[in-house]
Image (cartoon, rainbow, N blue to C red; front, top):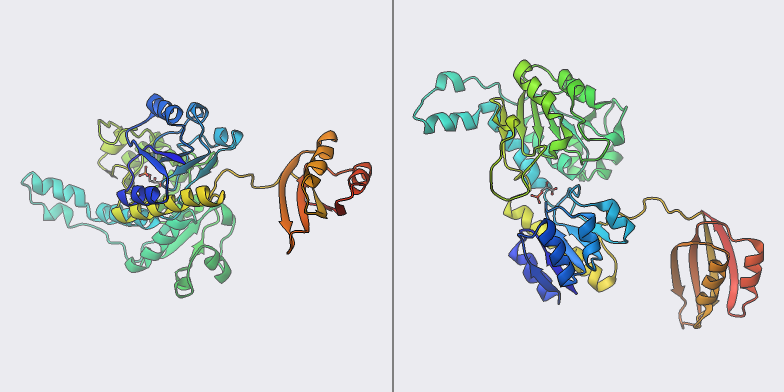
Length: 415
Ligand code: 3PG
């Protein structure tokens, strides 16, 4: 199968994909119209991207069956358009979590000690121990973590090294003001020895902000989380608190943030911005990045070679599973709940035409098949088909199906 890699991608990943027999086109600079054209011309079945936008027009351009986001966030892909066309969208969750957590702490330590200002003054030939010798220190400060995914877990693990008690809020635990249970810690991915890392919950985002000295965002961008940090949350942060965003710029209302930095002495570490350039290098003039209380980086959270190797290996795993088994790991756009209401179980002789007969009758009754599976018994003389339907089959239909000699038995199970 032909695949198009339209973003920077590790050499090890390209080599592994080629070794797996894929016809790999590596064109990391494609975007917009040139990407749509390459999808059309190449006839690629698989597209691999990082932050490059994947639009509806691109999904319509060629013969894509799978889009792999070689990273965690997939807000740059028109997932609804992919779903409507039966195109899988997969991502690589957790594979860059350590790198992002490391950058969150890099920003935190740099803000507390004003490392960037120290460096800038030294480079300008200035010595100012008087000014820079006034950091507050981190031990004992409460770290509020918004989100309970892989990156949040890595951040929580590292907070212990700095003696920072952790407070957690995520939508999944909204309203809870207690500790996570051992089972919940396990479900979050904490191992046996890490249970003591497990943390107190804050009942809401507002309470998390009010009770934290440092608030770090590790949320996916969704309609519910867009601008979740607005005037109300910012007003609850303690004076001089530190806010970190290594997730998505759109989680924060940047006008309200600018105001809070100016009037309330809020200190901020940002790796992500509302309007990031879609080029690797060029001009960037976001006024937020220029505020004295803000330390910004260039959306480099995931950009360590360790993380990129892990992402490349996961991408290879996804593509190989797709081409070799037809199954796709980490799909983000399958229906969460089946639209089926009833399962028709057909025990039948394993002969040509039996299922075609069943499906013909379903079509005649306008019953829509949502999912189906057929398993075969030892010897391949008999099989069982499980057919999930959008409506209950009526008695007359069941009678017609039973009349067919190769149908051995029928059962209807409400779902
Ligand atoms: C992600 O969603 O994985 C990170 O934001 C990294 O994005 P990048 O692959 O564009 O660096």
